[in-house]
Length: 275
Ligand SMILES: C[S@@+](CC[C@H](N)C(=O)[O-])C[C@H]1O[C@@H](n2cnc3c(N)ncnc32)[C@H](O)[C@@H]1O
Figure 1 (cartoon, rainbow, N blue to C red):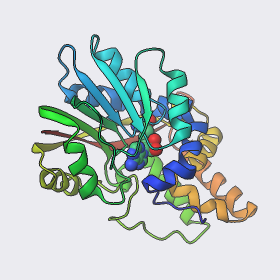
Figure 2 (cartoon, rainbow, N blue to C red):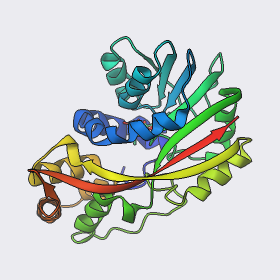
Figure 3 (cartoon, helix red, strand yellow):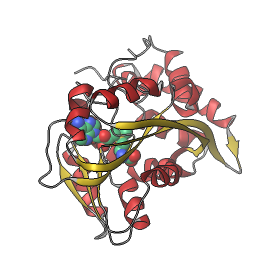
Figure 4 (cartoon, rainbow, N blue to C red):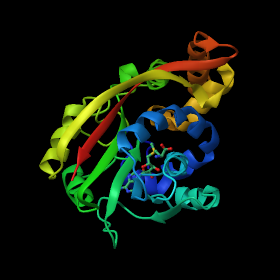
């Protein structure tokens, strides 16, 4: 199967989950600044039943658990590799279940539904969000973090620039599953409204992300090429193209060094709604 820059849920279940797991520590360290705005948007009160969907290795799930003492929190993911890793790291604060959240129905409804970058990969988003509406009790709330437009997420734009300089890299289809599918959040808000959610809103978070949680330029370039879906097509290219893309990306990373490590600005949309 050719490596794709537009991973779907199925790609995550089959191959991409293991790739994400292999970069779990640096990836979760890089994404951790998103936890604070996501948790604030969840409007946590005492003793809630909380689900995180597309929970990956569970970094955000554990952060939400720490912010919600007395609540129960369960993470769901479609990747067996990531569920295994998440349960191994859960530390008794959460439990993780293998499920395709587009179709799965939990036995009991939740008070809160959270996701850090886990809702952009559904094959049929209208069906998936209608199903997720049934996960929340009436009056329950959701908060989802989704990436802004790719041009405003510098680590993604940088990978794209470096890879597109050495291989033919078509622009991803904005309707296809992929990390920046809801870079225009009005598309996601319309889907949520059609699925039955109310009070749907988006607010923009902007900040700097420390690439790989604190890496030198060459390590940051290697990490980004291993971790980013934009770099996936490079796996089918030759060693010369791969080395050139890495060197180009290392040069971009070098230009973004602050205090010895690479930092890049990002834009994230925090989506909120109620059932
Ligand atoms: C970009 S990763 C984010 C992981 C994690 N939330 C984090 O921020 O570290 C997207 C996650 O969504 C999961 N995912 C994609 N489609 C899914 C589906 N239909 N059901 C459950 N999980 C899904 C993937 O397996 C992956 O772990």
